[in-house]
Length: 172
Image 1: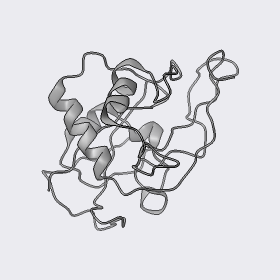
Image 2: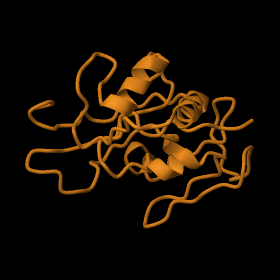
Image 3: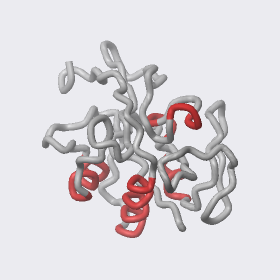
């Protein structure tokens, strides 16, 4: 089954990246083998990600903000517990939110229109603006968007609530 990529819904920074999951039954795989095309690996000090068959996730660099350093233990795209590195300005502290389909701590209660609005326009499921550091992709093509949505839906749901980001004045 081809895994899809929804990589940058709430990526709270301009450095957004790729990710992967071999899970089709809620368990995380550590084999690095799986369905899809030839896999991709992120480099530059970031954790290597298993093959996903979807180049959109890697191209958008979503795991750089939405994934912990050991995704096989914490879950793929389940958010971060440490601030995203970077100089975003005074009083700005960004944490990558959970993009798994968990309905309580992730985006499992969001519909595709809400996820699309976050990716393309930087608006969350409550109609609030995301931190400006989150890359927005208003020119994303429909096939890429559909692949990303499918990928996010295919992830194992992980119950994990990252700390709240602070990006004044939007999120004091």
